[in-house]
Image 1 (cartoon, helix red, strand yellow):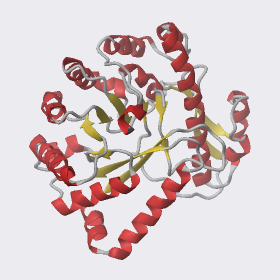
Image 2 (cartoon, rainbow, N blue to C red; image 1 turned 60 degrees about the vertical axis):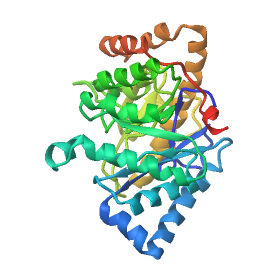
Image 3 (cartoon, rainbow, N blue to C red; image 1 turned 180 degrees about the vertical axis):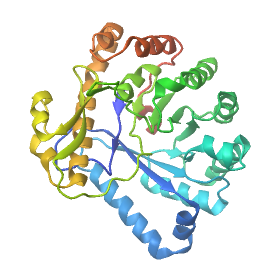
Image 4 (cartoon, helix red, strand yellow; image 1 turned 120 degrees about the vertical axis):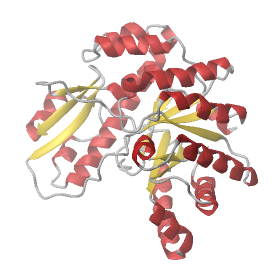
Length: 356
């Protein structure tokens, strides 16, 4: 499986629509009450596993399936039991053991009476508990919304363990806004001569400029920061079903201009709709907000997936700079940022190398 790749969130994709997908992401936010109940109540654990099995079953509809399970705590200092439950879940449902992230970690450190040492303790405890489990590649977690001064300490733990694949939690931000942390991660990998696989999760697509109906696709541009794959932003509020609403409020990716079109009325879909999409336009006119959002996610996975195939070709041809710069909504500041970071990016590796 060659990179770059857009990972597919199995909760959001419609498996009845034929799109090309190879890399899948399951993300679970777990508060302290929730995980304690899963450990103590077999009935709730059965329900949790049923939901996980359904998600993994979705991946069977696609020709290739590499799945990662990313656990996200809303608290620090989980118990040994809580961490071993996560590890056992990853053993069953994930192709990697992935160090848990902590949602809004920087905020907890500022206002919750915690320090970076609490997260480092979590990481070290998790890694030590893995020693009793069958061999599987480990993916180190790097929440880059923590202060820059702590990145090296966290990376050194992983590097000393020989870990060569990483998940960067962007924390619901635009990755281009935290380039110093990303540069530091890349610097340390290069210093140790490691060609790592880097996945980014909780990646924000960006915001529209004033008086514009198009959002620059800054999630796709973040491939230029050295990410081999990018996932969704899971920190958005949960969207419940809604009554009939003539305002459809969609964000559809346009690979020709590197922008997300803001579509508010059904009549605006055909104006920007690509001929190569397998997602039918009528799916976006469904009365159900929930089904419209799933159609939107599936469409964006499809179109970004097609674009990553193009990117592989232009990377091989050595023309990626001029190619990206030609996109209408790629602003000069973003392009300059990518160019500067790219100078220190480690060599790309195939994800399958870690699964042999």
